[in-house]
Image 1: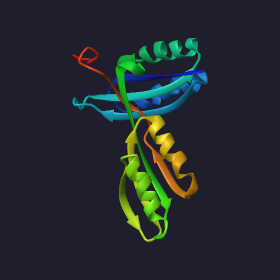
Image 2 (image 1 turned 90 degrees about the vertical axis):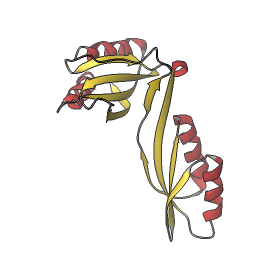
Image 3 (image 1 turned 30 degrees about the vertical axis):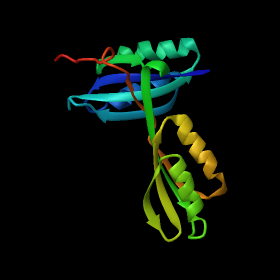
Length: 167
């Protein structure tokens, strides 16, 4: 099993995400991560999907999603040619006597504390998946009360991979 990151440019219309995810569910493919947001052009949305499977499954995903009417462009964001980032918010139980240790970890990972309550901290961290996974591992000695991950957002490096959509 391997993972691929697909970037889709789609018409920003109702139901487009449902139609795309329907291809995955009907065929039993797994979506590991999906993020969606409008682009600089409000008529177009960018969807970043991380999917896993063997070469044949991943090729089928790309072909079948690319056939949808709303999909203007689909391409793989290859690791060496792209930048991936993910955001995580983590609420950690941290009484006053343990807070300094958590703050030290936050500093090492260049994260931010965005909320402080009497018994907890909310930490914001942006980075690649391995950085976020490593940070969560380092927090194993603390009680994580809540955790929210956005999934991967990514762009190809340089200007060669920019897609211009003509109406």
